[in-house]
Image (tube, rainbow, N blue to C red; front, side, top):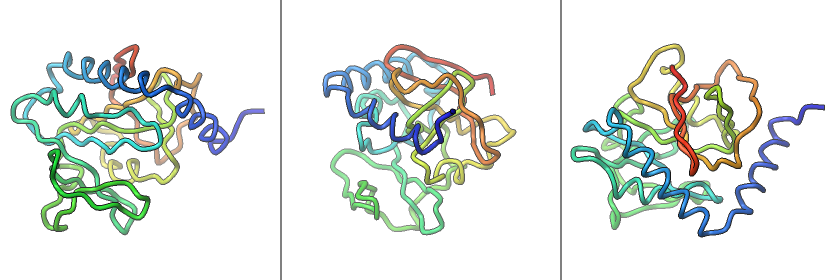
Length: 193
């Protein structure tokens, strides 16, 4: 019998948790190198990242290698279950959201809509070679980037994962927003969207 999405999430969290800190840091450096090699992703603009929690690939190395004119942003969870983004630099104030994840401590008026971003690095639990992703189950990215269904970027949606999170295939749900590309410690994949 095929595992449910919830069963897959439990298994994938365990896989990710089993990685040693050194493996996570090596993956962070490899992901940053993959992204640096993509000249079309180095255009000036707002780059949406995330604050790594629960063993996600950390993005500090990516943030340090931004191209000139690129501005690092972190997501802020909104009451309606969508995301907005705010520029953030190391040392800027943070406040934990309702999930305990640090977010920029800014006024709501200074946040950016997802459409304002040029590139978004998307966290995930699982992925397949067709550009489908399995997230944590809250639907925040799918809801926020629903405008990308059926249309090309920007913003370009790039999944960030470990190779051990690959799945043989994921059934896409009607609300899923596919990835344009994916970076792991082993490879860079494009999905031709």
